Image (tube, rainbow, N blue to C red; front, side):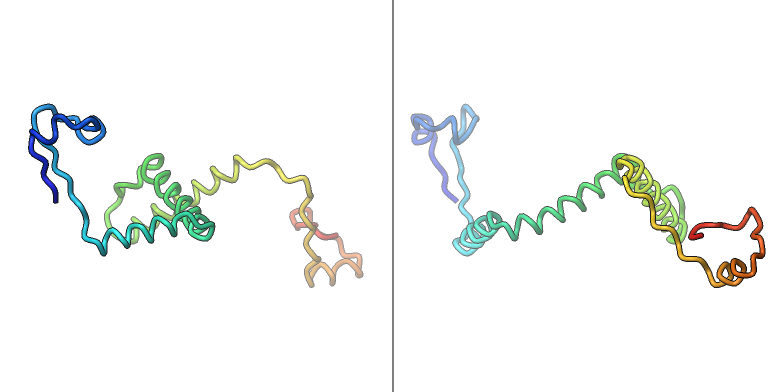
Length: 139
């Protein structure tokens, strides 16, 4: 830690970059060398594409947590008990997923039809009619 006396601090030409106090001197703290070296290594590592890719995932997760707490009131639980709280979390997550999916543009491709079931394969060659309530996908 370094302390500057008022007589040293006031006439300094770059004082406005250091402090905004009018009457007192300035105190500057310096971290230990090991901590300073660690900070420099970490800050250098943060400039790499690998770190930025990992942080992008974290950013997405933090955005989702922020959405849950601020837009859906998940900071406080509405129910007592771990089971009920879990149900609230699951239902809220389902609602958020539905909300996100509803904002997606529709797909251009039609879904692939399902293959006929074994029961349908039994009925069709024998020309047994299906009830209207049966699903006729895949025929």
